[in-house]
Image (cartoon, rainbow, N blue to C red; front, side, top):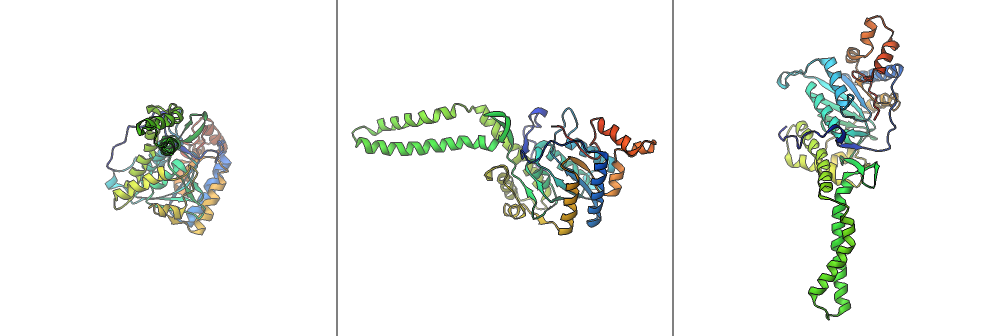
Length: 365
């Protein structure tokens, strides 16, 4: 990857977020029995499409006071495969990643995509239902992307606090483009007022005076709209949008066998700036239209992948589904060695606040 990180990583409490608000309720803690059901459903999926499988389900959360998604994913990968080998010495490993997410932290999704690439020559991402907003970045980092007929990616416009109601989120693109809307409105207003003044005065007043009148009238309408926007606001909105665009470019450059800078810039810009609203569904056909290759999932893979996602019962999970890797990182496995019960080891592990470090993840954001 050639370009440098623009501006560094944001502070933990200011990290860029792209999340489909309202699509997912806050996750509850996954019980040990629920974890077993997810892994069992995952075993069925791995039999259908052999290989190393893992599941990332739920909101992407950045490392902060507690470990986020990328931190837990890193621990899980190290637990199964150890310290990553240099790129030229890495084994010919393929990772199959089942992804179901409403989005979340752009930083976390980008880091997760990078960690997966460090452990696999080939990363295949499967989206039976949705990989919206920030989680679309993980799909961009895949060597092969598979969507079901119902699978959706989403735009990468960053979500920020709504200036009118800080408790709510809105797209930074709405704020950023509002300045363009006001500018266009001002131009149209001036173009309507000036001819009308010329018509009404019948040439009795000098054009220079009419220009001043039209300008004063237009500014009187527009000024209250613009006074609420500072240069700092505009710069912040533009910078937050560039985060998603920048990450998208880097992942596409890493993924494509033949780097086509024009195509990369075009795809990244469309994902951030093209769509009318944040919930726009980018299905397999739309992905192909904007230049992002995606294939349709086979029906049997979709059926079993959907069953895995359903078994999560809308609770967040990061973990291996294939048997050998799942066994290496089961959080209760060490407890069994010491003679503890499965449920007892799980309860202690889940209660420690790190009930996701190697298997199922629960967020509280």
